[in-house]
Image (cartoon, rainbow, N blue to C red):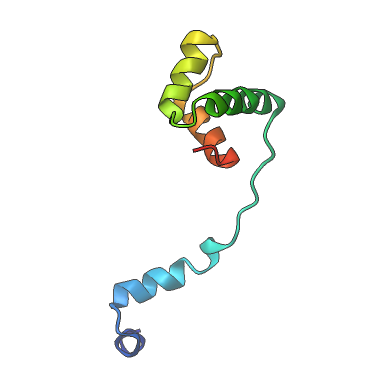
Length: 86
């Protein structure tokens, strides 16, 4: 591996890292959203449509404290990331 690293101009540890992670870079299939998550996603889209500058924390606060939706902040982040509303 030392020769390969020298030819490529990178460190040996980087070569091992690349070889180790060759198969892990495959595209992972995402699970479809549950009905509950889809309903929350609609509410999130409604909030973001009214206030496009809001991030996931502000959207989470509105969902929890104004709309009384029981949800975790990480779930709001995940849904917004999947729907690309961030």
